[in-house]
Image (cartoon, rainbow, N blue to C red; front, side):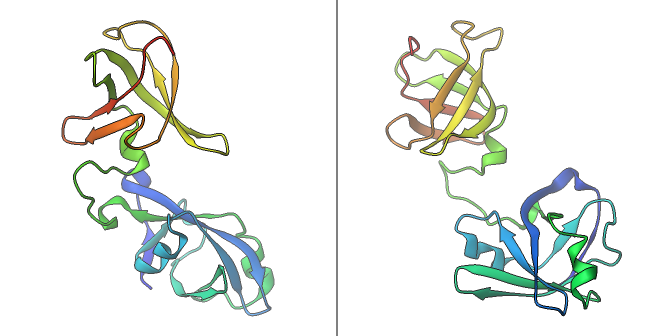
Length: 179
């Protein structure tokens, strides 16, 4: 699988190098994809800072519920061990195209959040949080917001998140501004 090092501006982290597996340089691959099996759909991988010269993933294979991979030219446990937790990236342009009303998490950052019923601007998405039960959008107020309240809105489709308009950079929500 072809890979190299490049400017990380257009890259998105999709995996990391886990613990070594066996003695021949294999490692457990921690997939950040959802579903995790989507890691098998990509072939051009990148790393930052030239940590591994001529970085190239030779193969990725599924072992039960985990993934195992090997970097070309790394053939023993000691050599791969020093790269544990190194992040693996793909180019954002390699991501599959989404349908209308869908967005990747990284695209949600800085989108305006508007209450669909009142039309009030609640603020902009500053980050996404996961508190175990549900992902939440963290909303920070802007100068044009209806008030100066910070909010956490659970990312639950059709209940709180009504629609996402990527082209307009807007998320419409069903959210009472008194929450």
